[in-house]
Image (cartoon, rainbow, N blue to C red; front, side):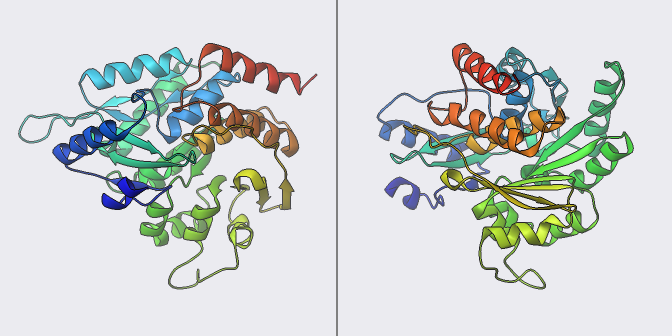
Length: 337
């Protein structure tokens, strides 16, 4: 906790560190303080969610912008090993001829299991609407039947050039897909407050996932979205703008609501030993959406999401081994018998 305070990293949130030298120094200092070796894996909000979708039987592809470096090769190898299809694009060379490096995230886990992120966007912030559109078309052309069920955006796409999130959602809808949005970072939600409300009011988002802090950030601030009583009130405020909004509250379970859905609360089984909360929300979203895309009722969607989150909460990092993936599949598919 002292390390987080020293480096102005808000606990439980994500902070951009744009300078490569400063980011590398932060990694070195964190490694020197850590009681265990650092784990390197294939992660990120949308990546983690796609891993679960693929593991539970959905056909999932990942679109993002990567550099032309060793980190990109490792990343591709990692997500392809999880059963995802590659819909990534390479960053274009800048004016000086240099290509942006693949982005990195440093995840710092405190003894209570809470994770805090520092990230260097790198090439990930260079994804364009043209690149996303090309990836969607390629994915469709490779599928029979040619249809898209859901295109899922994370809040970090708001940091990409122009109106990538909004224009990307419009293109996805034109191709017949529903659009999902994971709020992912209370800090980014606060910084992009007005833009997020405009996106929601425009009817671009069909499925919204968020935790309590993100819900509070979305529904607090200037203008019409002023202080609210709590996360549930935030959920009710946004639910009328979406087909489905999902609010996760950790051990307190979750709430769902939507344009035509009354608020409903679901409890979750407590997880015994929480090792690391990294990826828990992403894994929950993956399990929930995998069930939703199958047309399962909301109680089963909540149960699949909770099962996925429980698995990743019990390991260090956001990667599961083969035994854990098999256990998750058996648990979720067993609910259908």
